[in-house]
Image (cartoon, rainbow, N blue to C red; front, top):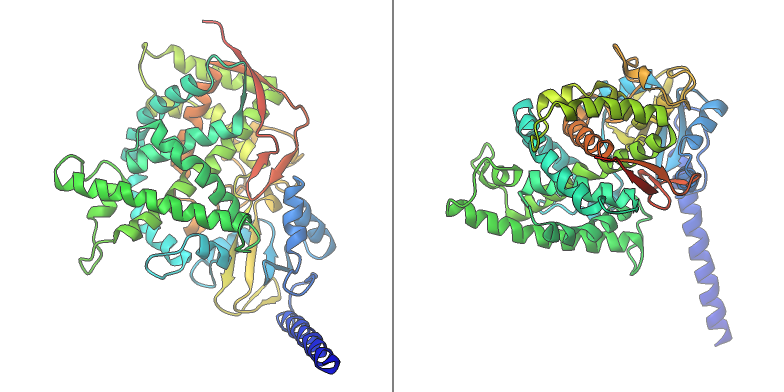
Length: 480
């Protein structure tokens, strides 16, 4: 019997050793092509993922990038991230190359965990679903549609500040900013009006966002597991809304042009086929994530910087009060009002330079190619980083200084300011985000001044930058 257990133990040790050797061999094999970019690749499977993520958790995501730029190359270095061989592209020329070669040399790439949290009813990848979504969006984001959205945004902003901020001595900004942008997305995409109905989605969406870039371990209690459960819950709730809208359209109770949901239910492809309700639920789920998450981070950091920089606050306040005084009582903001908010938008742009909601994104090489003399093998993942230009003194002198004047005139040089990405994959909701941010700023500063309650509050990037305690502030209402 002892021999049996000894043999079993030896077999187990051999299996583990062989598995580790195989992992090591595969890891090394990814990096044996000639003339690869300089850099280090870390441990088998793990690579440098923990260091890449941990610098964000510590509030300095640019450290991973700039440490390697100084050690290996200021433009491109190799690494291993999320279990994949990767090259990190840094700087304006690199941004231009990646953005200009979309669908030629590179395509968008997400970790497989994203497909598990966002499973497609059509058994297609999240990449394919994103391409389909981009074809549907333009008519809802064209100028005449955006003009109509402003009065709706202003109405919701007024209700938001009335219910969540007014008559409060202290508030926590980040959850309130998320409530505002999510309320807007639900109203404009789904025509949902009831705050209680919208609130049912709040916690599941927070769990979903946390699960997207978590370690993909599907065990009870892990962020990844909670993200999958939240995705399933939201999808079921969306199906109820979709079924009701289909019935309302059939009975003439809903308009075919009132929002994106109605359009999706009535649109057909080149073969005359309509989208299934599950397919629509998938797309609306992605839209709701994209339509509120990054803007809420931007709004939160606007509050942070305006608290820290009184002279910047005064500039925004004076501009917004000039607009407010030009309005009749009860009159809502218009497109012309938004165009007058030039200084406020420069401030918002500088906030997004220093704390970009989108830290960067992955691409995948679809062919072998040479860049800057280095070989990039087909299948490698390519990461571009907003911070490689945003916080680089070569593009923005004194990069840590808050200076909205950087955006006056023609603004920053091309491919240096990239909070919304660039090229064919530039965020299609960029103008929508501009409107909701400016409407938020208008309604905020005309009501309050404020101060931070935690002066040195830590910033955590996971995957977006957020204040560790949600940015609690003390409010000082303006006197009537």
